[in-house]
Amino acid sequence: MIKVSNLTKKYGSNLAVDNISFEIEKGKIYGFLGPNGAGKSTTMNIITGCLAQSEGTVMIDGHDVFDEPTAAKKLIGYLPEIPPLYTDMSPKEYLTFVAEAKGIKSSEIGPEVERVMERTAITGVSSRLIRNLSKGYRQRVGIAMALLGDPEIIILDEPTVGLDPRQIIEIRELIKTLGEDHTVILSSHILSEIQEVCEQVIIISHGRVVANDTIENICLMGNQHPVLHIIAKCTPDAALAIVDEYEEVTHYAITECPDGTELELTLMPGSDITDQLFFAFAGAGIAIRYLSNRVSLEEIYLKLTETTFDGGEEDEPVITADESSDIETEEEYTPMFTGAEEKEDEDDSDL
Ligand code: ADP
Ligand code: MG
Image (cartoon, rainbow, N blue to C red; front, side, top):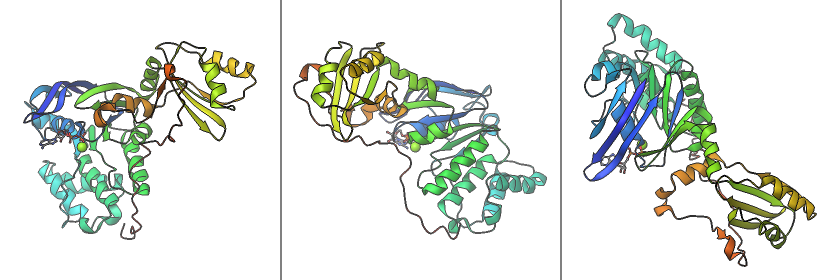
């Protein structure tokens, strides 16, 4: 459906998109995930024909966006990061205006505007001025705009930024229903959003694709750097005495916790000592309260994009096995990507 090949975009000397290639198949919801400044908007602007690339090609269903923009753009509905809404118009006026600009036949404009307003649940506010609508409803107007002309592909650039938690849930639900009969690409810097809505995820960092797979397979990538999480009902010293027996453990972090001791063990690639450790702790009369050899998608995401955070310095004080005498207490782990910024917006009375 979409084929991006060796796409590069330079802004002066700044390489915003660095030779990226990927394909988008028909009928799925794709997540385009990456930290701020990764190159998501730039890539989406090029795919939708709003921005010229420096190098590379984008084909939409066989049409080159650069050489055949009209044919290619007909297949795409785009909600840019900042939707170009005319706030002195009502949604109905605005959508009618955009439908005309998109070249929809005048006899079809009325029913088409009604259709997209219904689909995005804005019929009830169709004659209010856009500027008086809440951000959630304005975003729906933007999505309605993308749906005009019934394009097969819908591209949404960070559609939930700045919305309150309830609006975020509603927009995510809307995106899921769009995925039932469209190919959807949704960009976000919020991992949980992508995880909840998308089937396939393309992770981008510093203008490069660092992962492109199903969420399930990206989680399996964790096997290349196996990590074991253990909570054992014992002292850190007792836990360390057991763990020290295994040369597969390359790094560990140990923290005292209310249940005893929490360990995060990094193992040699391809190794797994989950069962051995279970029996070793049990054999020493120590109860294991938690044991997991699964790496969370969040950890993989942070690893894949970690150079974004101040040159890739680790925020966790990981101690190595040969520094075993020096057990430090780690700070409590706080997830960095929990959802969107939770903003208060109690004034939703105007919809
Ligand atoms: P994202 O959408 O992932 O946050 P962008 O595509 O907006 O990332 O930006 C990628 C990089 O390109 C950033 O370093 C950003 O500062 C730079 N950039 C984006 N737009 C422009 C522009 N119009 N002029 C110069 N640099 C830009
Ligand atoms: Mg962006």
